[in-house]
Image 1 (cartoon, rainbow, N blue to C red):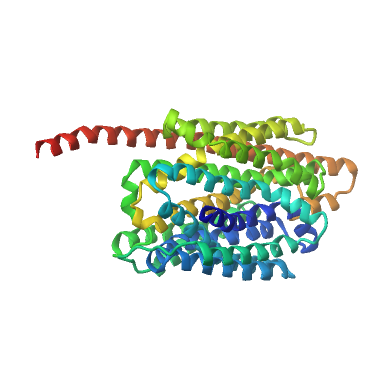
Image 2 (tube, rainbow, N blue to C red):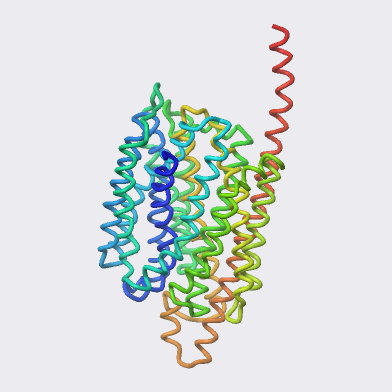
Length: 491
């Protein structure tokens, strides 16, 4: 029952990002939002959340995970109400940033509570179910958003969070036990500030790159600020007695391999879903509900395979490194199928369907293995911090995927057609003839194809790198066991 409550709270947070993706055309027309506005509506939430996740994890370990989970649900509900009533792009971006604060508290405490209440023998299965709900929220958002937008205005996609948050709030208070680190740790406020500023600066540079040029001051200055501030963050974390991120974790190759894989798979997934919803609606002409239904096979594949227990079974049979390679290769193959077989204005939905099924199967196999590898590399009393790291990777990877692949799309689109409009609908509206509109649509579709292939390459290379690091860590652990046994036997 507790796992059910935890999954409900997590589902509320993760639905929010992908529900928004299917509303992009509505926001573009009703709020006159540019492509950069849309990216910031998505990234404001992700970046605030990722910047605060580690601090939220520390706070949960110190003050109590149940308290932070309750506070997160309340803040998330209030932020959802503000977003649903927003009248301008700026108001919606600000509301989304506020929702990121509540989301940070929720993301850290859900996984931390799972680690606390399940024994080591059951933990992989519990994490697999937790990851299933996470993937469901990520993948089912377009379908839910399509149903809502088919009957209501875009603000309803945020207002539906409120009853779910209220239900979760009551269930958490009644069912979830309190747990915390008895030693406690002081929150690292400066670290939170530095990490947030650094990540926002880098992604801002990526977003404005296509518009201003990659060598312009508008790009180079925020990029330099981001690099410098993140370097200061790393130095501060090494010096402070209460770091939000213990940099010594990075000496563990198992930990490094798991976070590298997690970052890149979410990078590819977040960016590609952002692109695919636009392809289905802008290029192939589907309505929001039709686009959402055509995205459903991704969610169904993930849920079906994980509920069958496939992920844990594959980990036991193949080991974590091989499981990661298998899963991320399937994700990359799925993205490639979407780009090559389903791309273009004449693309086939069959190619997209094949890609979604491969994508979902890869997520079902690899995600639980990587989440378990991250959490098992961190002491149990720091479960909140571990969950914060895992959540930071998910949110930052998603935001970075949207920014980078969106930037690749913008660059490719601008290279093929000379338009000054800030979005595809505006460019089509400004076209002088049917031939020019077709040229613009073809250029946009070509940009989508290129972006999906970049995402596929990142996921595939990431899988190989992550697996190599995890295999190396396992070899070191095996080599250390005989030495430890000899030492104990000698005593």
